[in-house]
Image (cartoon, rainbow, N blue to C red; front, top):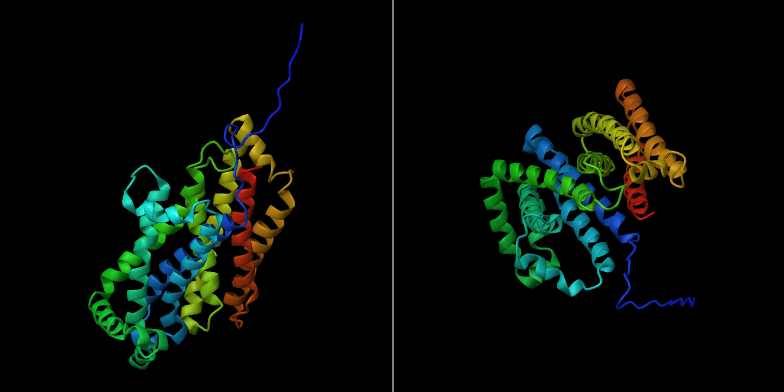
Length: 315
């Protein structure tokens, strides 16, 4: 019997797997941070009267479009055909997470900008309208009109921003969870996990700013709750994988003795959650001056979580 072996590799015929690099974890991380900032600023604006808000809190809504723009830039670097992005807005696919995400992102920009200009004081608004780029493009009047409109509809805009923030945080998890063929991503825990992690990293970014005492104290309390919920969801995520089929158990083993074990437990669980929780507890109980250590560790842990999950889904 004659045996013939054929070996070839043609990108036109054979399957070609595109490996996600650093761009996707960065996009998911910045999206989560933006979601957290949207949710917390909405709640703080309702909790703290206009006259008592710190300057940092008044300017924080503008951090959302900045973070989103940087995240979308990272996403564009990963796309094979960036010029095809406008096609997402040519249709609405109700069963497509990417379609939902595209429209959510589009709605966030005007809402957060309106909330931001409504929170500014008169002198701050004047400084914005006289900013050179706006003066050259003659958009200063648009900012003034937007501020009047936003202040007249302040309550409704904060409600919309809160809803969009929750939707954005959930979407970052749905984006991975929709890819059910990947065992590490095939979990219903990912959307709430990414939402809560985004709330925590958003609070961390805000606590790095020079907030007022009451503003920082409220954020610290909310963040401690978010950390506790995130730890519980991580345990449920690992438990769900460990008690499922052989493929899912293999994915769980990546974090329970496998190649990502050290990084996951050291960067995400210990440094990214437990240590910040302990530091925030001590700060609250002993009324110590806040430090940057806990917020920085939370940001590192949030980025590490997304980076490791993206890698695990492709392992």
